[in-house]
Length: 584
Image (tube, rainbow, N blue to C red):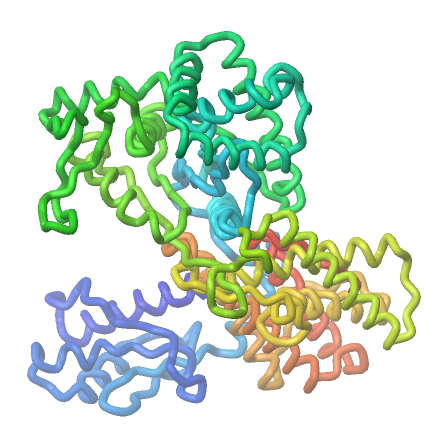
């Protein structure tokens, strides 16, 4: 329908010029989807904006445009409404032709990007020697969905996992393990990840209270940076152990990432500082090397600097992010770089983006985008925590969702007196549990906080993954009951007669608009809203229109509508990282 809207926009522009002259060439016809379906499908609001310029009443301008408007192949004759809206209603024959055309298209009428680009999506980014927790959930799920949509559109996407694998914390941890568990620094898998996290906490406590230990830890950092063989070996073991634990979660969530940690950019950090110095941006402040920023001040109202080299000669996150940004532009040749992190890091991104621009490192054809998201809250409206007040481990959260989906399914099977294999029950529980968590997150506007509720996200009713999975399974139930092979349905078979068929048809044809908007605005909740609305429109059609019992040619036409709905749901959900089930 995106193409339909473009065609209509072009026709209204031509009619505008034909009615009032070439001076109005290029004027936006303000063509938008109709606010109320009873008035049509689209409305052009341009007449209201031209009243003053043309010295005429909007309704008279709309009438003059409508007289010159030829949309007979697509729409019924235009109608003028209210103060000067031009209402356009799509012809049933046009809708039928569009559906018949996309029936054979695996992309369901969604065109690929005209100019594919190299795009980087930076997401997930856990820290080595720490477990992934609920705070990593949103970045991982939102980033994956954005990457999937960009890949589907034909862009060359590099999915980067910028893990925290360098810096003071490793000196601290290695120094502590030398004392309490030296075998962990020489032998693979000497500790499990839980023990490693526990040792990390103890090392941090010691570091904060023991000056002698602080100095020992700093010396380990120096040894690491200098490439001392034993320290480097210990570091690699710790990284590898964490990496294996991360991979368990990524496989559970079906997430693919290329790891490129902070350590990757370590050799490039001194060059960042040197080049900032050469460009005249570097200022020494209390021994640290900084760049002062426009629009950022401290509590006293003084200009706020971004520190790129600390007074002790060490580097920080900003230095690493500047180095990674330059690498992504110069070596990866990225044209859009997307960072998916919590909203609390907004200032950090604004600051180092500004420094990179001041330094002249950002070409005009490169776009930098921070994709911020809100917090995951518990049902008490506070940060989501365990009962003991600890941060929720991501593995525990996902296991709990699958466990609850398993229990819900068992209860439903008992009520329905259905017998299913344990293998079937486990697979359905896994898909439903993981999908419920993903969809509950993605269906929120990412900029908002949201309340995490297992009961709501696993509900078979409402805007949830189980609701949509059920609609998909229902359609495959129709094919099983009627022994129908959707792939063998007749071509050019769609005939739209009932109002619910028309409503479903129009909505099926809006997929391209929705995907295009998410590609630009990076708001996956728009795709969720579309899929939920589509599911509701299908259920209205299913409730009011016989399918298998209908006479031909209606029967085949309605089966094609079922097939197109199922394929649209499957495609849309796959772009959210959600699997479908043919039986539930």
